[in-house]
Image 1: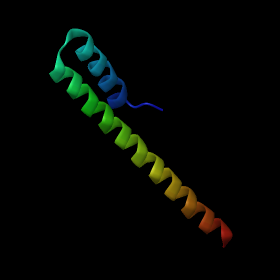
Image 2 (image 1 turned 135 degrees about the horizontal axis):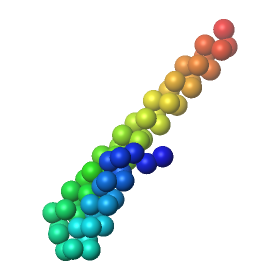
Image 3 (image 1 turned 120 degrees about the vertical axis):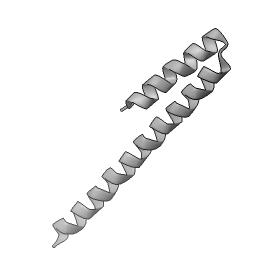
Length: 59
């Protein structure tokens, strides 16, 4: 699921590309990458919680 930074970054990237604004395009790429990073970190957290739950269920 995309978060706000991914969506906004994608819009800025495409708008910058369409208008020739390289600064806006780079800003969008960075913001989108930040959103990807947060999403991946959330996935790792969720997997770790699942492992902990599985271990607790064994007892």
